Image (cartoon, rainbow, N blue to C red; front, side, top):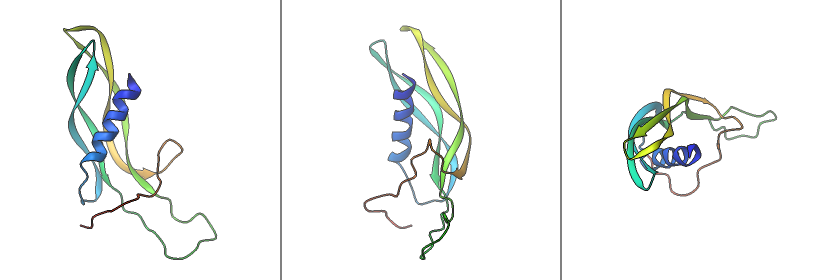
Length: 116
């Protein structure tokens, strides 16, 4: 259930991107299917674009580290009247541009990217 909720959060984060730079928290209402009904939970995600230097020459070293908008996450449990089981959902506590790591997909974007 945690993976389904986290995937939905990340999908919603990517759905509404604008051209402003920086990494910031955003409040969203997340639909969660539980016990045959759909409940909405209010949570916070991290969104934004991080400044990236992209040199136009070949490096002999690894070059500058790519950064991504990431956050410090905690997980909360919500119980509803219709379902005796609670469900766990992620909440971003702090958002910042951090270097990519093994847990983050930092590949290049493909397709049309509108300019600001």
